[in-house]
Amino acid sequence: NENENENENENDQSQAERNYPAVNGVPSQFDTGSDTVDLTPPKFAAFGVPGAVALALAMERHQKTDWRIKNLCLNGACLGGEGGDVLAELLSSCAVFSTLTVLSVTNSELGGHGLESVLVNVPNSLKTLDIGGNAGGDRCCPFVVSALRKCTKLKRLGLSRNEIGADGAVRLAPSIRDHACLTEIQLDGNRIGDRGVAAVATAVRATAAPLQVLRLAGNANLTAASAKSLAPAVGGSQTLKVLDLAKAAIGPEGVKSLCVALSDAGGSTCLETLELGGCRLRAEGAKWVGDLLKNCRSLKKLGLARNSLGDKGAFELSERGLDFSLGLVSIDLRHNAIGPEGMKKLRASFEKKCVTVTDVQMDGNKLTETESGTVHEVVSRQNRTRLAVAKKVSVRESLKKGSQSPKPVAAAEKRHVSPDTTTCADASHAGRRPALRAKAVLVGEGAGKVGAHASKKNERDVFVSKETPSKPKTNRETREKPLAEKENVVSRTSTTTSERVDLCEATGTTSDDAEKKEFVPHDGLTAQERTSDADSAADGAADFESGAFPEETDETITQIDSPGEPVFVPPRVPGKNNTLSPGSAKVVDDVVDAAVDASMEMSEEEGEL
Image (cartoon, rainbow, N blue to C red):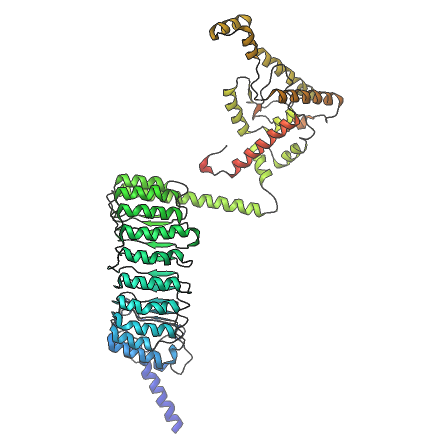
């Protein structure tokens, strides 16, 4: 009977717990399947001290279970000093929070007393401690120091908007210097002044921790001296990625110190985000920021809002930095009194292919919606072009990694011949006469353009375009063709005696000089090279007559002279054999192959060969 009574009492108690009402939105039970308790607005209202008591009772019901909470967020709870005492007792006595890693109690009006109670009882397993917006003042800084010594794995420390002054920052500096794991420090919205910034900068420069984020925005009593103190620490850091100095009145002199330090660091710095909004830079400070953009390749995001840059500042920023920036992705230029002229200069910078900016904010300037939209249009178009080029480059790299090179197939497409046919033709180049070998290479659209361009320079160049398909030529016709073309060229270049006399009277030269000039070949070769070509041609003719070269079949001629394609025939020199020497043919092959390879790698935006 006694056992039955105890079971009934336990059932009644569990039923009462399940029916226990929520207090100011804080439930009596929580889901034990999650390791996060988040009671922040708008999902939960500011529950105050009664809600903190209800949270403590709910946690006590899970005291004997294996449930452990890793993330506790009570932002905007309006706990006050008494609520801070309740939370401190809960953290110290409840086993549910023994492995807590994230504690965020921001904007909860804890005050100095409440922060003292919470900081004394934080578990040593914390990795993130955010107590910003609680007006703790310098009074809480000694307890922050004790928490830093206790939590050796702490990585993120948030002390924003806590009315910390210069004395508090000086008190915190040694702990920041000695901590080995800090990666982010938030001191924005305080009033630490130049002395406090100097102490923090010295600690950051001397620490062994991999500090990545330093936020000092909203400290309105900062001057250029603060930037001068920060410059050595920021320039010498190889881990800092984010520096936030928004609303710090450092002016042109202060930004000069920072930018010079970062520019001198060059490739050693890894700074990615620099926020300088509301720092009173004006046009004089814009030129130092431009130098920073030119020298700091790691910078990706730059904030310059509300600095009264004007058109002059936009010109300085473009000419000294944006035109050479290779890594910047986002830039904020809101409320800078930039007019149409400055916008045109910025747009010209964004249109350059080396500029990688994809996000530009231009609201609040002296521009119409249409003028502002043109900048966004340029940036978006450039972004699409970069994506297309990046995709093409990735495809090219994947082809290069493959076992087979794509060059033979692409070269065949340029010549309008199938890959198999190209292989056969290339294999037969070695046994073909030099003139036909060069002609086989110079077949295709690119060669036609070269021929058209050359014909304008030299009237002796012959450009033949085949409009209709012709029947395959026989070997006899192929051998007789050079002789006929040679006779045509000689007939075109010969002049009558009367014409030579008229030419001499017009130019004031003798007939002998005119005759000499008439037969000067325009092939660009020296006398020695021309003699060598003549000797090679004579040797080639002798070899051909003796049968040293394999006989060309109709199939081979068809592969070389495919119908419907323009063919470039090299210029012919009167009185000389027009057969190219093997050395000259090799040079032609190398030049054409290099041009084809270059045209394959050129992007569509830059045009085709």
